[in-house]
Amino acid sequence: MAKVFCIANQKGGVGKTTTAVNLAAGLAVHGQRVLLVDLDPQGNATMGSGIDKRSIASSVYQVLIGDVDIAGARARAPRGGYDVLGANRELAGAEVELVDLPQREARLRDALRVVETEYDFVLIDCPPSLSLLTLNGLCSAHGVVIPMQCEYFALEGLTDLVNTIKRVHANLNPALKIIGLLRVMFDPRITLQQQVSEQLESHFGDKVFRTVIPRNVRLAEAPSYGTPGVVYDRTSRGATAYVEFGAEMVERVKTL
Ligand code: ADP
Ligand code: MG
Image (cartoon, rainbow, N blue to C red; front, side):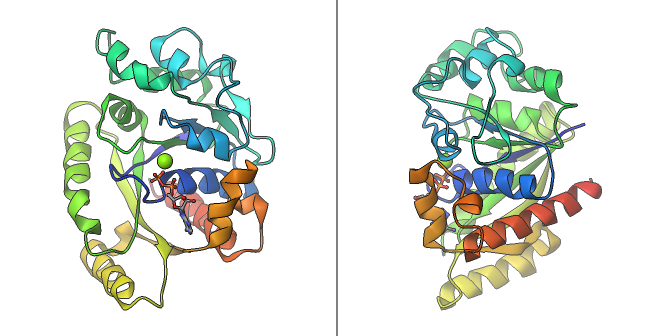
C-alpha cells in the first residue's frame, strides 16, 4: 500500500519541485515504485520529468473534477523510472470549480485509492500557496516533507504551514504528520546557513532529516533537459544527496 507524501512550503522557489522530482528518481534508484503527482498549475514537475505539459491528454485537473481516473491520466517519466500525474495551466481553474463539488478537499485522496496498491510511494508536488489544491494534497497524505533553505526568514513562513497542517490533522485527515524538514540549497561556506541549520537541529531534533541537499548547479540545469538531476548527472553532489535522501525516506516510512 502506497505511503503518500506532500512536498509543501507555501513559499515559492524553495526547492519543492526539485525535491519532488529528484526524490521520485532517487526512490526509483532504490527499486521503489513511485507516482509523482504534480499539483502546481506551473507544471514544473511534469516538465522536469520529461513530459510536455502542453501535450498531455489528461492531467491531474481532469482527475480532480472526476472526468478520468488516475490510471487513465498518468504517464511514465521517460528517464526517471517513475510515473507522473501531470499538470498544466488548466489546473489553475480547478480552484474555482472544486468549490462547488462534493468532498472538495478529498477529491485527490479518493482518486488515489484506485492506484494505491501499485506504488510504494506517492509524492505530491504542492503549489506555493495554502490553497484548495494544497488542501487536496494534505488530505491525501500520510506526511509532509518541508524543504527549506537555511536563511534568516526560513522559520517565519513555517508557522502558517504548521498551523494549516494542524488544522487539516484535526478536521480532515487524522493520519497527517510532519515527516521532516529537509535542508536544501545548502552552502556550508556561508556561516549564516550553518547557524540556521544548527538552530533547526536543536529546535526540531529528529524532525530534521539527516540528509542535507547541497546547492549544486547540476540540479538546476537538469530540468531544461527534461531529466531529473539524479539521472542527468548521477555522480554530482546534488544527485548523490537525493539518492541518499531516498534511502532515508525508505527507512523513515518503516517507523510510520
Ligand atoms: P519551488 O518548487 O519551491 O518553487 P524549485 O524546486 O522550482 O522551487 O527551485 C527553485 C529554483 O532553485 C529552480 O531554478 C531550481 O532549479 C533551483 N534549485 C533548487 N534546488 C537547488 C539546489 N539544491 N541547487 C541549486 N539549485 C537549486
Ligand atoms: Mg515548484
